[in-house]
Image (tube, rainbow, N blue to C red; front, side, top):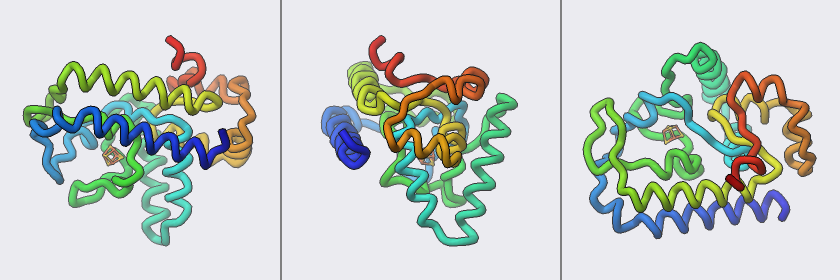
Length: 194
Ligand code: SF4
């Protein structure tokens, strides 16, 4: 499967999840502008496949917003390396998502049947199981890629050599072994089958 086909399949998987949880989500307490799960977060895990879609969107942004997002991504990486909570770099001031149409699955899977108020979301067990199954399928789809926190994956994709190798399906985890170990980067083809 080439990258274009993988992106299409990814969208199908997102759609499959949305259809599967539509009934459950009817009782969600989430409202536009809440953004608790975008602010009080540790990791926002994404796959490289999701990362490249966001990376390509970033490349289309105009200045000064492009530089602003780059700066936020760098700061987010530093904060997370220091184990500090750091709001998502893509959250706007009005608490809406700048990349809502291409947000990663870790954001799509989240909802809560009660207002979180700084706590953890409460999700139906069946929806949680469905989300875990879809996540595995996404990792299998991106079997030549990796998973990790959003600013870490975008940091890797910003490196020309890594990006080129990824887009050419050249799988060489040794190349990122040190960064991977220190930043909790997972190798999709190893985790998707467990
Ligand atoms: S990508 Fe969008 S939905 Fe996901 S955490 Fe960031 S701002 Fe929130």
